[in-house]
Amino acid sequence: MEKSIAELRETFKSGRTKSVSWRKKQLKAFLDLVNENEDSIFKALDQDLGKSPVESYRDELGIVKKSATYSLSCLDKWVAPKKGDLPLLLFPSKAEVIPEPLGVVLIFSAWNFPITLALDPLIGAISAGNTVLLKPSELAPACMSFLIQAIPQYLDNKAIKVIGGGADVGERLLELRWDKIFFTGSPRVGRLVMTAAAKHLTPVTLELGGKCPAIVHNTLSNPSKAKVTAKRIVGAKWGPCTGQACIAIDYVLVEEKSASTLIELLKKCIQRFYGGNLKELNSISRIVNKNQFQRLVNLMKDPHVAASVVYGGSVDEEQLVIEPTILLDPPLDSEIMNEEIFGPLLPIITVKNIEESIEFINSKPNPLVIYAFTEDETFKKRILSDTSSGSVTFNDAMIQFLCDSLPFGGVGQSGFGRYHGKYSFDTFSHEKSVLHRAFYPELEPRYPPWTNFKLMFIKLAYGFDYLGLMLLMLGFRKS
Image (cartoon, rainbow, N blue to C red; front, side, top):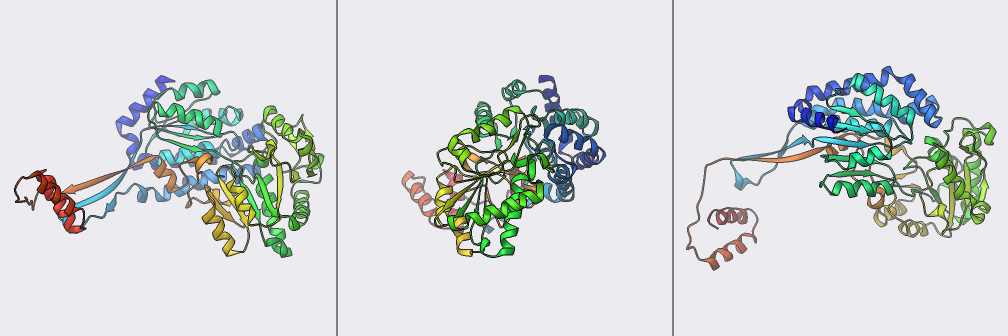
């Protein structure tokens, strides 16, 4: 391990990765890797999570291909120095902001989207000119094996390395010094990563999760919009990795008078999309392993929680499958309402007035995303002004993750830092300010060297704009 990291440092010191041509070559090779191994990736995702080819392409391959293509098309613009504005009184001078790579980067990826969450940050790190060590999740072993085998065949093995192993390997990696750590996973492990990084003052990006709510406001009064609302909730909750996603809808807030209408629409959509019962389920992933399966089953074992199930609830332990399940008003102090669900269970929480949903959301840690189905512009403004979240999406769910032009990241306990597109490039870069100052003209102040006079001089300078800047310059020369 230490030898591999030393090689990454030597490669970075050589300056090879700073070349734009090197970065483009790696991104093109990255696209070859994905295009030429499509069937192998499909097979690995099926082995680890039971994902169908359609789901695998939509949520994994398609995303990273789009991301790499976008980065290739924008790279020349991203790496170009940006002109800095200077006050007229500094003439003749010029300034620029130059993005430079951070150095040797460590990327921890997660198991729920083992291709996307490994390769999408890697695209940003390569685009920024870093050397990278990628640590895939051992909970998706087939995908981890594929990445370990395939990446050295396509990418520069002296600059980009992949290491397998479990938690013990991760702990050893965190003991070492890095120039940047990018982590995707649970808040519990995120705290460990941040604690370890603090020892070396290593900058960290944490992509965590949280209980992402969906508010359903006034769209149910219109039959056609109500159907669209239900379809988008069902597709976003159970479609991507059967709810095992940090941006999946964790619970729904709706007014009491509209709850029954929403539930009936959700039932019909589930049956149409995935099948009417456990034995007929199709196009849906399985739970990643027995531990996660048992955790989800335990959430429903509470008698009061079990009594709130209004649809689904069946499980197949052998196949690690849980039927899409809807719960109506489970106890608010239950574990299912205080821990991120990360699975195919959807609580519906009723409120007397939809305005109460904002207070409910604010009573919990900052979510990664807030979804709201509403056409009320005043209510939209209230959500934006009175809540805090990584992002907000109106009248749909999860599509914000696909947008390279939008930053993706959390706030508070849902994480910090951001990536996607240019934001990935920025995350793995340092913006260095450069000021070029001419030697002439040069002015010197003429005043008695009295301490009190100097102090008055500086105080006066701070009271003006351009004139003050000139006075300060003169004062600094003689201070």
